[in-house]
Image (cartoon, rainbow, N blue to C red; front, side):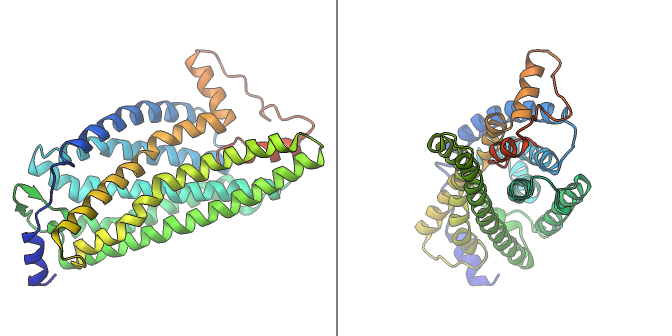
Length: 341
């Protein structure tokens, strides 16, 4: 980063009058709800055997969501300006883990969508991607790749913290190479999000079409069934889009103000900062919505949770109550990326 960029950055102090008050309150509420819901989700899911790639991917989503939840208290203290040391720790480590878990969750939700698509189009056979061992290997690979690409953001945040008007900017801790790597990782995140969203839309479009044809062939109430299918598809794709899309619209221009000083007007920089922080909170809210989607769409999860809460042993057969009309039941229950196997 050249001298003129540094000087401009120093002259433009961050307006934290909103972020230091409003966002700590919002994140505190988010943390309480997320901790309760994800603790229940983890407790319930890890009582379910990993008998399918579907369950394997869901368990990894639970782990990612739980780790993201644990980063929230550091963000609260950082935004509140409690101590420079906490802010520096957040910039170098906690924020990086937050983004790691967010993109791992996004990738896994895409893999879940693909898994449900394969379950519908090949109900009597399994592709290699649906083998449990392969699902476990894919999950490990996803964690390893994202961690490897994000780790330099920690290593290259090696500059002495610069306090500007009582506030530490995370970008001030990065070396010039660190700024470029930070920018590149954000572009990588954009590719992950938009490719995953496209994959989900394609998969659930074909799933909806297949299930609708199944209802139509069985002379069921196709109109009512179609409404239910659309509602379930909207829950998955709609929540995914609402949580993550605004952030990925706001992220690139904000990152350019950090790395290349693309926006010189101080007021515009502050507006992009507020937009980024607002949409980031919206992305974080996904850790509260994922457990609710498990309950709403995943029957095996719902049964286990109810049984555990009522202290009754869950009645689960080897086939999870699948009976003679396996094909149609599979088609119906396979409508969502979080339905049972």
